[in-house]
Length: 162
Image (cartoon, rainbow, N blue to C red; front, side, top):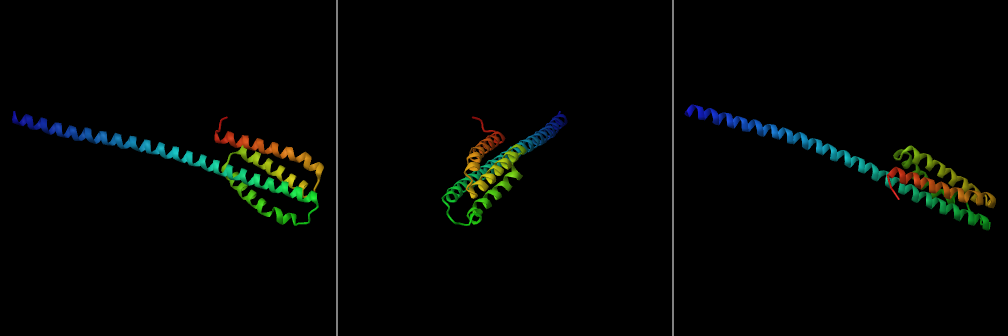
């Protein structure tokens, strides 16, 4: 009887160790899966935040460029003498830097709309520098429309719902 109890004790201990080991492996496997899922979610969220920041920075730079173009037009209409290229340099520099970041960070729809918006801004700048009132009157609303379409594309890419 004593021998049989010892065998039962040994079997119980070995069974307990085996069960504990199996549960440990299962727990480790599940923890690994959960950690991977959390890491993937964090990467997706970080990419989304990066797109949001890059888009924001581009829109701020584009707005600053637009305001500079408007002032260029006002000064040109008044007939003020100034270096128009030097006047625009800081604004175009920031616009181009942020545009480049946007083109490597955002999706195709946003890139296409940003390109169209940039083209509208450059056309408006040319009309402003030439003090061409007719062209300015034509391009002014077109540029605003391009900005609106760009903002809608950015909001769609970021999943912003109204």
